[in-house]
Length: 527
Image (cartoon, rainbow, N blue to C red; front, side, top):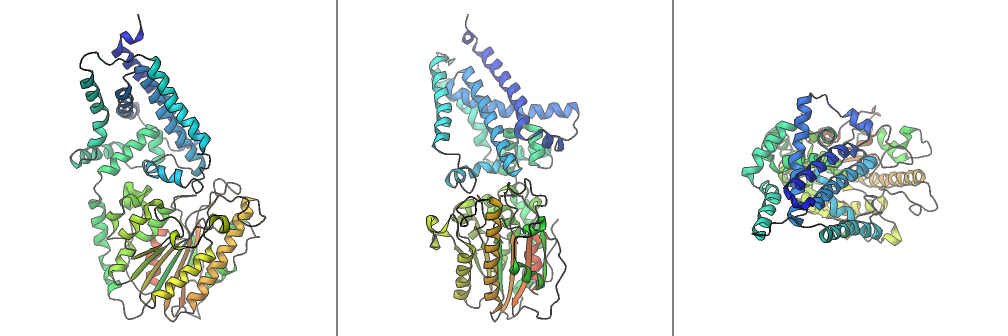
């Protein structure tokens, strides 16, 4: 008597064993202390429902491996590996940036391998690939050779087609509005408010990823955007009715910029930031959207004026569905009001899908890395802020005196902060400190040029997030970054007294700037 003489019983036993292992390992996606902080009180009935909700997800993955192999033991081992790998990736991501795996991370897989350094993923080298391919294909090959197939002898092709349909048709059906909307509605009601950490505790990594993906596919953006669009009509009308002045707005998003003097590092000298704080209309600490990474989240919050909860499930990667927000974001509204809009960023235009998303958000022109004379071996991994400043000044001068909105996203402060970045410095904190001071020098050059222009100029400078500087702090004791809103040129009030610091959220800053500039007297509050 052999196990494979009872294929149905063996398959069911293998599936049951897979479920047990998946349930036992799902909790490893985050540290125990974080799990405890994000574990909600649940009745035994609710706990059983949450466990049961994972089973259809495991069924589909088991069915997929079974459909391509018809080998129960192989399918069991493959399912366990699949879920454990997702859990391991989630744990590694959490240890690095304190967020478990989210569904939108899957859209970044290609970028992770394409831009390994910026994702701190240099370990994904040839050795990694040898191990990965050796495990996946080597072990699969051994199973295919040693384990008997349980495919029925009669109508084998038909059974294969049926099993493939069972395994993959539910995923394909999600892309049909007829299916996705009711499934999304049911999933939303079952989950309640989407919370990545809490959902990872409740359902494990992969099931949580699947449920969030179901919501992302099925949610109707029209229901989100339409009321937001209506609330912004009055502010847009005020922009249209503005007088004959030709104002210039420059927003500088400084990569990983945070004033280390907040944490007692007095060796960092930022004289230009200090001077601009003294003449700022408003300055202070900026609420963090996400600590240590995901620049696009802060960037979108700034450009859109929307809270993360305003954009619902899109908040983790808003540029995946950027077109849905084209009527409410600031660049599009300014463009409609007759402004020129430009995005300047010295990095690959395809990163974070900016090449597709930003034109949809209203930018007339994009100046990206391909327009910079940058040689990594000669200039270092990123374009310096001083070089970027020269390009920004040149672009502003070429545009003349039209109403201009220029958004600049720098890269020079980005890690890793390794020896060779700044002369003989080898300590990551010293390297980062030197980059901060170089950023301050570039900021001074930019502000000096803008202040000489014979037009109203408004400069908004801010750090997008705290750096992943684990040699200094992990996590940062206070992830809030720094911002300044400074009137320059004809907008500067020479008798202005210094203002006290004020905390502000990124989604409010452009609206706040416009009010100071007299371009809008009413910018609706988000809520």
